Image 1 (cartoon, one colour):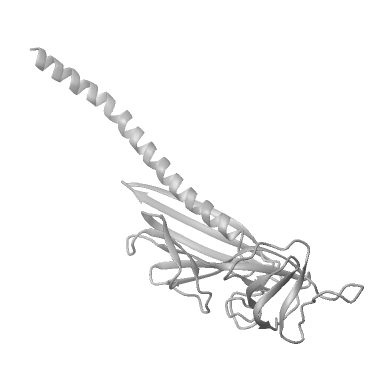
Image 2 (cartoon, one colour):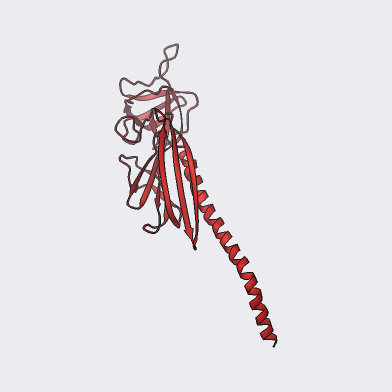
Length: 256
């Protein structure tokens, strides 16, 4: 009799407890999915803010969407003319030049870095750092002078006398379910090439998120000189019958 009564009580209690437990599990799953999607979008947003102006490009190969940009570590202003005493190593835009003085603080530089001046487009053969006509390979520096590995004739002067230090290329590849593997992966430190690689060869890569059921990356530049860009990110993650979709827009400063 005790066993029967205990069983009845247990069954009644289970009926009342089931729904709260299921709700707790559902809420925890939604929170986990939201956190994964939010972390991924925040990582992309933080990275894109370091992008070389006018270097964002997007392509699709099969089921996979690739978002690529050139990551910068700093920059500054180059000397465009000698000082009042006729001294200083000014950057020559008439003939190839292998070194120039910087105005202000010398940025952090490392082996494999590139110096880019006045990048205007992620495509074409003029003022495009991917094609390399405005990108020189860094080799060494002193407190005031940057030296390139080979003399370089940059195609255009920067109106603000700016240069940027490029570390490497970065790609985010999204391969959503059901046709793909359902993953978002980050590639970096591979060779800078044109046209856009899909996927990049060499370098390093890491898994950023799984269970991706849908994603889209779109980029548009506005204004007569395309100095302002908007990167739109949509990411959808599905697990255990639950789906979370996050949307984010990133302002991109394209002033070179």
